Length: 64
View 1 (cartoon, rainbow, N blue to C red):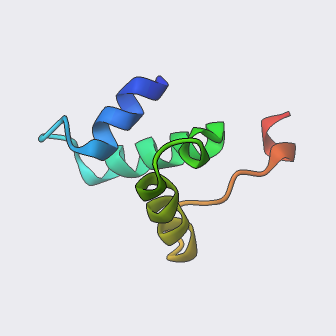
View 2 (cartoon, helix red, strand yellow):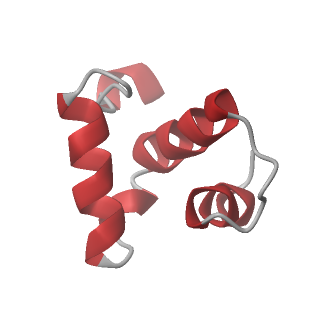
């Protein structure tokens, strides 16, 4: 998944996105670190998803 598609999915541009696709989009944004560079909503929502166990935090070791 590319960054723009992930952003579009989490913003609701794709009305037909399934739950697993939305979660995958959030996880992509977290894994790339992009989520922390976007508007505050994205970071706050990502933190909620991580705290709730829906997404996992990105480990720099896992990206090496």
